[in-house]
Length: 133
Image (cartoon, rainbow, N blue to C red; front, side):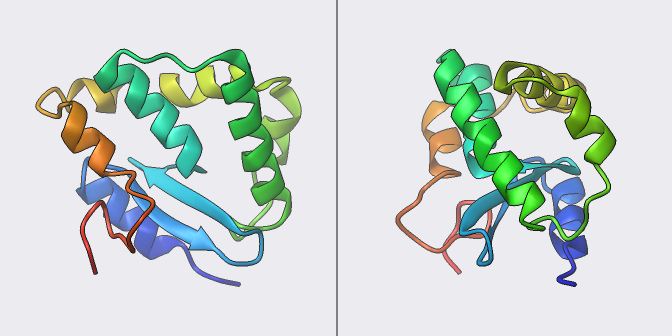
């Protein structure tokens, strides 16, 4: 089993999301303050919080379906969230749950602004929290 502890640990130190790629499911993933999600979900949350750009229901649903595919493909290294997953009925509900879980953490990140936030999600280079390796 691939360990994700290094991503989880770093996400508790750095206020920004930590990204990694799961080859088995071909999915970009994120851990943000200890909360696992897809990179797409992290981007939707960041865009809402820092840019005032809200995700559409379709965007939330597609991001959730990507999360579900990764989860059931064992991208997170376990299936311990089955109970939570079974209670979430839509992308909107999952998005609401993620933003609620991150609410207090996001309040501590007031210093971040648009361009810097967008740079975290640069898909055109290998990254470690938005910086080249």
